[in-house]
Length: 165
Image (cartoon, rainbow, N blue to C red):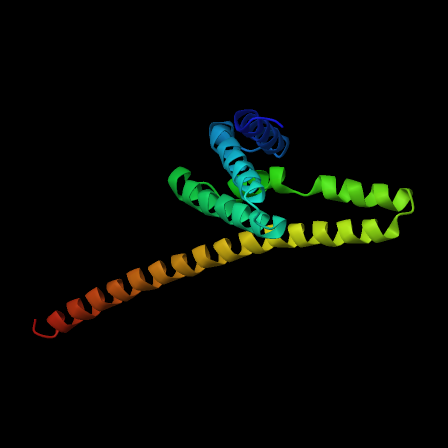
């Protein structure tokens, strides 16, 4: 079994490569790699601690999405520049490969079982990202509304003083 450091490095390089393929800005590539590597290591640790694979992938994708949202604010870039490459190491490509392999050797039962597990993992990844992205969007709208309300109250206060002039 590979050490965590080697897995971290592999996920980092794969994520950066995927980001380069999609023309992410050079200055954020180290951050993008870090997002993917953290997501991968988190999923590995959760799976090794007997968390179900779907739960592990959902929690890891939530971590990826959360870090992406934070880095988006810090670097003034869209969060998708971090989250899309960041989930790359989590994509269950091996599960799809196994499914096709089982179909080719005519083991339909094992193929169906592997397919359902793979689809569950993919759905968990999507759900994790949707939850965090939605919460972030709600938070941004709440902050914008709060700022708008404050500006409106200040304007109303100014208008009320202008009555006495």
